[in-house]
Every structure is written in C-alpha cells, then in structure tokens.
Amino acid sequence: MASFGFGDMIAKLKADPKVIVFTEGTDPRILEAASRLLAGYFLKPILLGNPAEIEKAAEDNGHNIRGAEMIDPANYDRMDEMVAEFCELRKKKGVTEEEARKTLSQSNYFGTMLVKMGVADALLGGATYSTADTVRPALQLLKTKPGNSIVSSCFILVRPAATGDNEVMAMADCAINIDPTEDELVEICGETVECAKIFGVDPQVAFLSYSTLGSGKGEAVDKMRNAAKKAKAKYPEVPIDGELQFDAAVAPRVARTKCQGSPVAGHANTFIFPDINAGNIGYKIAQRMGNFDAYGPILLGLNGSVNDLSRGCNALEVYSMAIITAALA
Ligand SMILES: CC(C)(COP(=O)(O)OP(=O)(O)OC[C@H]1O[C@@H](n2cnc3c(N)ncnc32)[C@H](O)[C@@H]1OP(=O)(O)O)[C@@H](O)C(=O)NCCC(=O)NCCS
Image 1 (cartoon, rainbow, N blue to C red):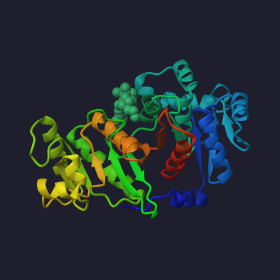
Image 2 (cartoon, rainbow, N blue to C red; image 1 turned 135 degrees about the vertical axis):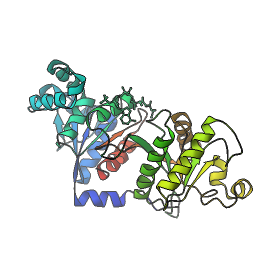
Image 3 (spheres, protein in one colour; image 1 turned 90 degrees about the vertical axis):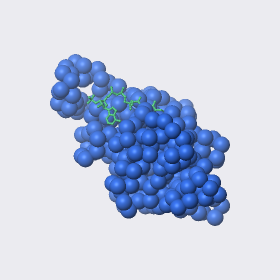
Image 4 (cartoon, helix red, strand yellow; image 1 turned 90 degrees about the horizontal axis):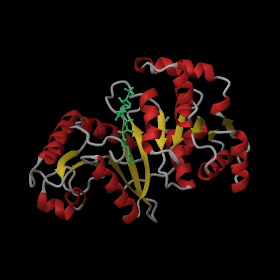
C-alpha cells in the first residue's frame, strides 16, 4: 500500500513551474488537458501546429486555451539554429541540412529539439504518433543519461482505495526493450526501483518467470534467475528475488508453499518482466481486469523528460501524464 496522489507533484510544480511541449497541438484530448493545465497555473503548455488550426480545433471542441503558447514547425524563428544543432547531433549519420529541415518539419522531432534546446522542460506525445515514433527522436537526440546503457520504461499501476491508502505497483519494461538481456534487466530494475519510490512505493522486486526458484527449466528461466542474482548483488539494500511466478510473487499462501523464506515472495510490488510481450500483456491485464489505473510508459534512463501516450488515451490521462512528465523533469 502507498499513498500516491498528484498533490505532491502539483505542489512541486507550483513552486517551480515547468514548460511542457505537446506534439499534437490540434488533438481535442490535448486541448482539453491543456485548457485544464492553463487554469491550474503550474504547467505552461506549448502546443505544436498551425496556430489558426489549433485555435479552430479548440473552439470547435469548446476548450479555452487562452495563454497557451503555440509554435508552428513550418514557421519557427529559431529554425536555422535548430537545424544546425540537429545536424551536429546526427553528424555521425551524415545528415544533410535538407534532410534535417524535412525531419524537423515533423512535430515529434521538432518538439524533441525544443527540449534539447531548453525551450521546453519536457515533452508529451503519442496521442496520434505510435510509441516508436514518439520515442525514437528522444533516443536519437536526447540519448541515455550518463552512466546508463539503455532507455527503458515502467508503468505505475494505482488501484484507488476508499481509505485513500491506494495500492501502487510498478511494472517494467512493458513498452520499450523487446527482449532485454540479463544486464539490461538489472539496469531496468535499478531505474524502476527509483521511479517506484517517487510514487510512494517501498520497492519489493520480483523477477518474473513461468518458474519459481528452479521449478521450471529453459533459457528464459535462466535469464530471469541470473538477472535477479546480479540485481541482488548490485542493489543489496533493495529486497529482490527471482525467478518467481506471479502467484508466488503476490499471494502469501502460494509463497509459503513454493518459496518459503523468500524476502519478497507474497508481497512483491515491483515487477520485472522477461520481455515486452509479457510486460505489455501483464500491465494491461492489471489495468483492464484488475481495475488499476495505469500511468505510463514512463521513460527511464533518458537524458530528458519525454513520455508517450497511448493512442487510446483520454483527456484525463493526458492531464495526468503531463503532470508526471513535468514533475520528473
Ligand atoms: C524503442 C524502439 C522504437 C527503437 O527502435 P528503432 O527506432 O527501430 O531503433 P533503432 O535500432 O533504429 O535505433 C534508433 C536509435 O535509438 C537508439 N536506441 C534504440 N533502442 C534504444 C534503447 N532501448 N535505449 C537507448 N537507445 C536506444 C539506437 O542506438 C539508435 O541510435 P542512433 O540512431 O543514434 O544510432 C524499439 O525498440 C521499439 O519499437 N520498441 C517497442 C515499442 C512498442 O511498440 N511498444 C509497445 C507499445 S507501448
């Protein structure tokens, strides 16, 4: 149990307001969230797109976006500077000025460069772009944080309780790395633990598998067992165990039968999945059948604050992810 709410993040942003760029400035869900953010005065939205089209979309959908900054990639006064910086960043790929201009006419790349240039503190995209098209510019231009070898992601799952003592869990990597290696899983674990703490979770980490401590066999089992062992050595202060089946990880009765003495079995709250198939399916089961609200994917290990929306998102999810993305900036 943990008491995650947005109050702390909003208070942090009120003390230090941030600028967030939305790549899809004419999308009605973005406009609704932007209108709500503008009314709150703790986050300054930049909407990308043609200002006349943005204003028309806002009016057609009944959203008041007075005070929002609008930037049109087709008419940006610092474009030459942006193109030069882009060419420098992609120098080893031999990008020409013409190619850079064409790429930067797309708002996913243009918005990411606004973060790189310090015009915005954070970026939220993906209302219409796919995950790959939102994340790729960030991987190419912002790159990994010093000391990290990969960008990964986690979801924070929250099941609201009437008492206010919400159930909060972290799941990773459900969205970026398709088949992480043992060492990548260790890095994903370290990043997810830090992210989970921000959301009030006291991390108890389970490396998940179809096997519990040797009950099943196979390469995928070995991968999770070895990764758990390496993670325990690297983060001795964090309770970690694996490989564990999901029931052993969360159900005390099953844990007593299958793995008595495990430091986390029966009460794990931070789950490391073997690959993106398991992770993506797993968080969606919790969301759709377990009544958990899912926040994410929250990108981890990136040298900048960029997040991706699900194309099926609603305005409330855009609003929540904007707060999370800016608060993590
Ligand atoms: C994230 C993802 C888009 C990157 O794929 P991609 O763009 O085809 O990747 P590429 O191999 O062409 O790499 C592009 C750049 O990103 C970098 N990169 C790729 N994956 C990376 C990672 N996990 N961490 C850090 N950098 C990464 C590459 O090094 C490369 O950099 P460079 O251009 O400077 O050399 C890909 O891993 C993917 O599609 N993941 C699944 C996304 C998805 O569908 N999720 C489910 C829905 S939520």
